[in-house]
Image (cartoon, rainbow, N blue to C red; front, side, top):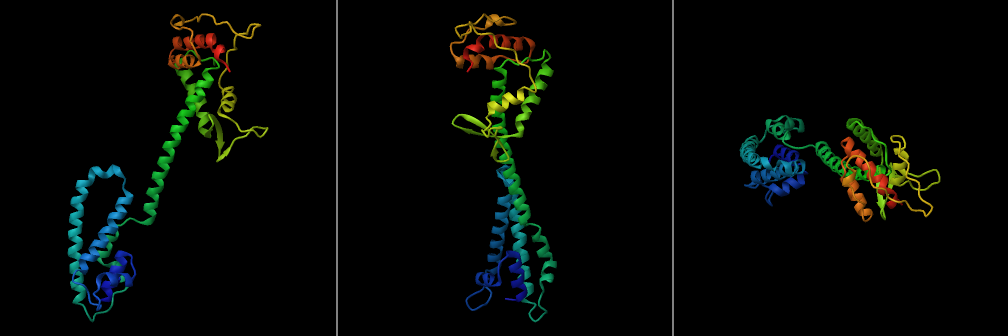
Length: 287
């Protein structure tokens, strides 16, 4: 086998000369009759692996089209390899091709563009990892904001009559909790920052409830709880205000939270109903 062919094949398959000789030479060192098929098969495996790693499952819809293009490409590669081998076999005695000569050939230039660089592969891999991480964090933050608003609304914040203003205030308030990460342990959610737990001035870990109480003071004014009687209990009064007649005293804390969660706050009537219900029955279930 000509040295030029050997160099071309090592470049194309990214293997050493010894590895290539072992694949396409007979034991006596002569070129195998099926050398072109062996080289083509190895190159197809390289291309297939790189393309498979690069594209995700969303590209399966184009499988039919890719198969047809692949078969056409295989036919072109086979013919070009056969022609190249014949040309090199008939050029014995001519000057040996250098690496630069090989890189300038039409065959090398054409198929070099069909491969995926290591940098491009790593870039796609990193993008997928980032997307997965962002999606998972968004789910966690969504759950955290729901917990926060349950805590805040349970303390009777005074909300604006304007639905738009009330919604904007709520969204701005909840966005404050995007600045942290969170870790749950034994039912308690701890606040994290830069991979470490946030601590208060006494060195104690800050919980989600602690952070909610601190941040909410910058956004809301809360109604005071009704004064308790001498016995230490609060006597519930019938709810008043819009829609109050629809509300009945909850049997337990679970029902209390369920009713509150079901009251819409997108209009003035709903907000008044929530405040009335919370003021009346909230103290009974306060910790």
